[in-house]
Amino acid sequence: MELNFEILGPEINTRKSRVKHTALGPDMAMIKVEHSEDEALKMRREIDQSLIQFYFAYEGGAEFAFHGGSYKLKLEAEKNLLFYNPLQALPMEITVEPKSKLLFLYVTVERLHRMFVEASEELAFINPENVNKKFYSDGKLEPSTMVALSQMFQVPVHGPAQRIFEESKVFEILAWYFNRREGTDVEACPFLENEDNVQKIRLAKKILIERMTDPPTIPELALEVGLNEYRLKEGFKNIYATTVFKYLNDYRLDVARQVLDEGKVKVNEVAYHIGYTNPSHFIAAFRKKFGVTPKKYLMNR
Image (cartoon, rainbow, N blue to C red; front, side, top):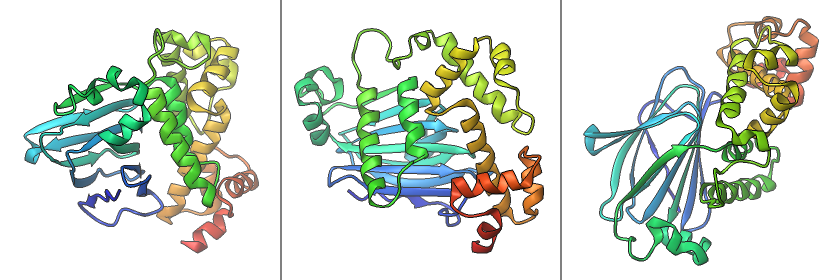
């Protein structure tokens, strides 16, 4: 299935922003949007009315405008939208916010029906009685879905295995989306059933990002968000699929790469900019994450 979007503006596949299309067979497709620029990204596409559309915002967000902007919907960070309109095609423009990581999934009704054949009558929009009706829903992403999305944007495998990994994650995300077990859909970690604890974990991430050059220690961070150290570390790992300081380190290095892309500062200055006091430690960490030293990265630009 080919669903390439028309980009309304300059070429977008740069080191700072990318729109990647992956066909998952003739009846399913994925669009992964990683937009790190400071300006919004605008895209346009007319979506076939036979497709069910899923939109997930891991970070940032987007606005969907239909019929020339007469009708708009907002996708916010850590939330999702689902569209299905079998009555007409949906020409729409999507404005992606700066610093966004979004996942779009498009599936035919027939494919989804085959995936959930035994439960299709329980899923409102693929119930035979409703296949010719419009359907829309939105909601907050559960921590289990956030973990899968995190892994989708930090793919740990490369080469031919990457396609297999991404496809498996698509099915995992859909499985969590349609999870119907009793109670709230949460991951195995029991204390995260409390929404207040989830918000505290998200606050911890926000604090790390805002104070990346001089981050608090684990005890300080736990005290600041109101959790004990164990719950902070376990909760963070469950929601973001990594440890507290591995997340911080990866975020720092992503910022470093963006600063290097601008080509205005030296490697040592970048190290200090993101909080490293020893440039050699920064160089080693950068090489471990991206496979090249900062200097070679600049040369390859």
